[in-house]
Length: 125
Image (tube, rainbow, N blue to C red; front, side, top):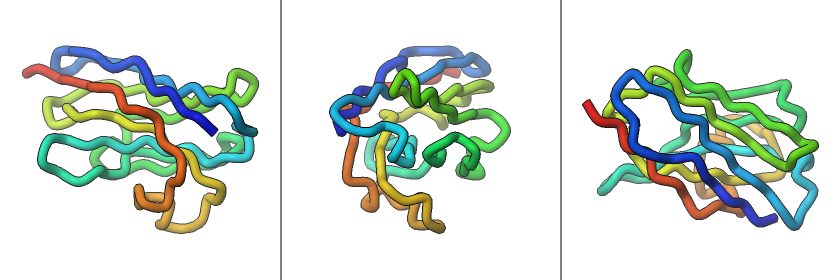
């Protein structure tokens, strides 16, 4: 499956952005989708994940209550709605796909075999 992330940009603290991850070349509804982010000089970190149907979600503590992950299988697209953005949310955001929901392994980026190219999110103070 090929993934294309989009929707990043520059926003002031407290603002909102919605990221999209469009999939092609595979059965989108058979993949667990995850969002990760990577700030300069830091390791890629887990943000959120959603299961095949959208019935189960998982969030990093740092974004819980502010970000919402969702998906539309009919459109082969996953989303990350980001509200109340903070300067520390500044990073390149990546979407990934994997086959299983699993346990905490879904929070490890190395368990995702498929990745989009990343989209920059910059939050100014």
